[in-house]
Length: 261
Image 1 (cartoon, rainbow, N blue to C red):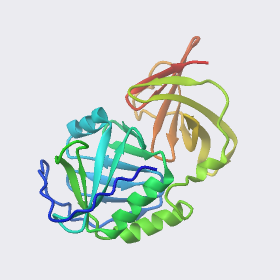
Image 2: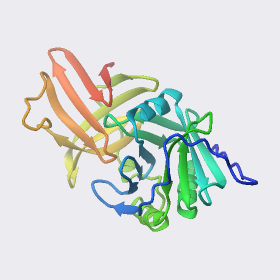
Image 3: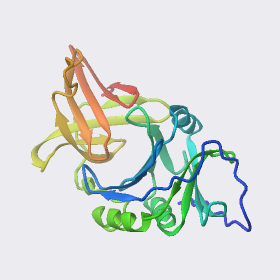
Image 4: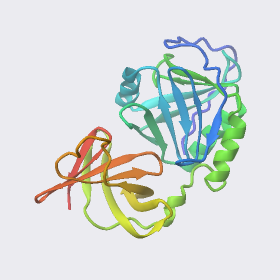
């Protein structure tokens, strides 16, 4: 576990590029997967069972965070005084753009995420900033975060780091490989005995989540050639499975993953 606590001895001077603290109340939602979030006019911060999703004001900020493979989560006692921070990067988290916009920070260590949640519940605001300098992507008020995080922890099994999907064994079948800065192996299986609406499982580098299948996922548009099924993960991830002739591939985020077994 690598926690980077930096106790401030005075007022922190921040070079803010995007703006003011988001004055909005935190909300807990149980569907489609447990989450606690705060939303403003131009940005959103969402907490899930084992990861954070942050939609900054501009897509270029999402690109910058993923390109740097890092983001600084700075906990503020008030608008100017930093009382601690956590540096999320390659060593302790997976960072990627999901759903074509938000940045997802998936923590490798449950204790790291627990630390982040404790600080979010205890402080007045959080500053999400550039990993290597005092440039801010977004600041969020933490009013109501304590109550929302408490409900999130309860829904996630007492600690928002354990997903209910870990009871499943990784599927065996076609393995899809690919990715950008982070290489992944992805497998999926359709369940014979669905768990409610969850009728499939998806494994990413050995970590398994539940998913719902969708065989018509393009509204009024005709599905692309070779489309087999869409898998909608409990963590809001989306996988599109294709097969054409002897060629098998899967699309996840902005990347294509080809059969590799």
